[in-house]
Each structure stands twice: as C-alpha cells, then as structure tokens.
Image (cartoon, rainbow over all chains, first blue to last red):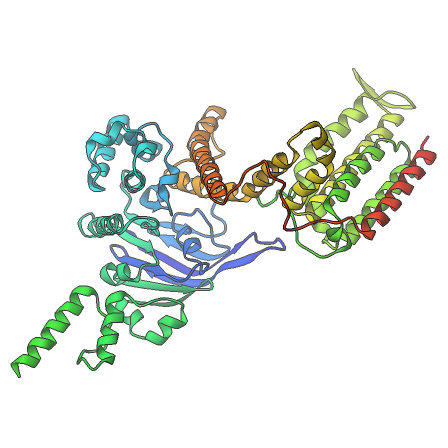
Length: 290
Length: 264
C-alpha cells in the first residue's frame, strides 16, 4: 500500500517556550503523493531539514498535523508505537556514513531490519539485496565499514536504510561531499529506486540540475514557509523569482535562456538536458528545411 | 539537552558580563568558601542578598536561574532529607526507629538547602555571563604562576578551550546520529536496562569515530598553520583587570569579613 504524505498547516518551533524559541516552519500545507519524486529546494536555513524530519515523526509539529498513509502525527503524538511508521519511511540523513557503527558492512546493513523484527536469515537476505541495489559488490560484506572509501561508505549507509524495505525514501542532500561520479551514481540509484521499486522519493538538494532531470514535483522553501509547489517547468520558468529565492537555474535552463537572449529561436521553457538537446536539434533541422 | 542550563552562556553587556573572567572565577571559589563559614540565619541572609544583587546585576531573567536548579533538585532534596533525618540535637519532634526529626535537624536541613541554592546560583551567574572561551582564558591567567615549575599552562588552557569549543558540535552530532538510528528502528531510553545499554552502542561508536576524526582534522589544520606549543602565544582578546573587578572584590571581601564576625 503506497501512502500519501500530507502536511496540514504544520508549524514547528524549536525550544518552544524558552527565550530562544524560533519558528522553523510556519503554516506549511503540502501534499506529496505516493509514487512521486519530490525535490525540496531552498537556501540554507529555510526549513527543509525540519520539514522532512516530520515525515517519520523525529519531530512532531507544534501545530497542525502530518499524515503519512494511516498515521497521523500531531503535537499529542508520543514516541510509542512509531516503529511501523519509521519502517515505512526510510530516512537517509546528510553524510549518512556517520551512522555506521558495526564491525562489518553486512552487519550494519542488517541492523535496521533486525530492529524491525526480521530474523537473522531474513535480515541477511534483505541486506544482500540492498547491497545489490546500491551496487556494492558482495565481496565487501565482511569488510569493516570504516575501511571503505567515502563513496562506498555512503552506499553502505543507504543500503542500511533500503534493507528495511521502506515505501517512502527521504534523502537529505545525499550527494554532499561526493565527487561528480559518485554524485551521478547516487542520483541514478535514486531514480532507479523510484522507477523500479516504485518508492516515493523526497530529496532535499541544492543541485538544480538534479531537480530538473528527475523530479515530478518541486517544493521551494524560504524562511520556514512553502513558497511554491509545482513541476520543474513551472518553478524555473520565472527567472526573476528564482533569483529572488536565492536559487540558481539548472545549467541547461540557464543555457537555454542565454541562447534565446542571443536570438536563437527557442520557446522560453525551462528544459532538462535531453529536452534542450531535442529542442535545439529540432529548431536547427526546422531552419534547414525551410 | 535544552534544559541543561549549567554551562550555558548568554551573551550580554551587563556589569558582570564585563568583569574579567579570572576575577569572576576566583570570586566564585571565594564565595563558595565563605558559604561554608556561614552558620546562622543572619550570615545566610547576607550571602543571599549578595547573590540576589549579583543576579540582578547580570541583567539575565530570573527564570534562567530557576531553570538552573531543576537538574539538581533531586540531589538537593535527598541531601536535605538525610540532613533532617540524621542530625541530632535540640528538641525531638518526631521519632521512629533509627529516624529522628529534631529541631536542629530541621534548621540544618534548611541551611543545607540554602547552601545548595547559593552554590548553584553563583556558578550559574559565572557560566551565564562568561563564555566558555573566556573561562578557559581565566583559568590560564590564574594558573600562570605554575609556569615557574614548568607546568604547561598554555597547552592546558588550549586543551580546555578546544574541549569546550567542541561540546556544541558533538551535541549536534549526537542529535543527528540519534535521529539516524531512530529511523533505523532504535528506541532510545526505553526497555530494560540491558536493552538500553545495547542502544548505546550504535550511538557511542559513531560519536567516538566522529570525535576522533574531528581531532585529527583539527590537528592537521593547526599544524598546517604553523602551530607549535613551544612559542609564547599572544592573544586576540586580552582581559584586563578593571575597576569593576576591584569594586566587586572590595564588596565580597567586606561581606566575607562581616560573615566572619556575625557567625556563631
């Protein structure tokens, strides 16, 4: 059963009631439908990380409700009975390799499933499958995680989340600190999980190029509020507004805009790399045919 | 974590904020020492007035000081109860088995309570008005005489300030790791003692790994910028003894003398 995620007038205040209270989210209403790929963007401190931590009840709203499938989280929610929710919602934090602690790769990956009641054998099977998914060769299963390279450690950490077989996968800047190749591989993995495993994906990212390539829905946040929700095309069509939000345009969109400004006949729509290539080819062909 | 007021610093610009850290540190020790001289109502009253004056001069809302007591409240209550139940002397008010409540016991219990409050208050005044780095600096100044016997005062102060500097960093990291492990199905702080100890492993190992990595990176960064512990180091911020310090010391010394005469 795929689950929708629904934020209904959610506010969250850090250290509520103390003199240092500050509101990190205010009146956020948002729907993330099952099987969608949602990118959350916004500059640092806009409330992205606070927002995603509500989805598996690591944070509970000060006001409003968050609904994930059958679960409702509000300020009355206690820490009891959250396991089924957390099993359903896989969470990959920033620099997830920091959470590794077991002696071997496979043990660390099996940690999650075992916490959720899987037997050793089930956990092992889930672990091996997860290693396969993230592209970690099985020869690494008895290696100590800390002996691996940074990129591989990150795969182990992601595999540790995938082994719990979540329906919703949340990733907070999953490619931060990786080299371009590692970056591409992780983003491809996410895409593949979305397409083949039909996971609902929520990604917090600063890389607009990733957003325009993969996301069906983009959420732009600023100062704790949702500024705009739409398809990448809708979000990036207003260049001025994008700049106002202190965001950048995806490379391909920026390139298209420059082409158009230089007099190249191109519809002013924000384009991913593939669409841009196609549009240019078509325009050039069209011209030559006339 | 957010309730932990001990060791929290609130920036400000009050009389007490402006005093030099070394004098605040020494005053705190001095004050704790004279608390133990106090032994009757008048002496405790004098000390309480002094503390109230200090709290008002710090310009920090009283609620912060009251919060500071909360983590200690059980220790205080326990000590007071022991004091009441086991100190003999004076009129016996209640008696049961080995327990007796006497008039003197009640009075002593009251004194112990006030004593605790005073000590917590003075140290809270110190930590709320003095940044951790300033405290490290104050320690360095106070320990300076030990240099004569080749004690590595500067290195010690550096270690202290680095340790203090990394407390918030490690706290943040702990929160992140706890959240990550919670997402993987760990229930912190529930279940039997054995289960609780088990949940500490996935928290502590990443935390230690992180701390060691930080230490390595920091030492590399320091060495890359030419750090050695042998040279005489100058300071970015120098705390001078000011008129404010002298004034406060005069008041505190007078109070100390007064206590000495009024005590029983």
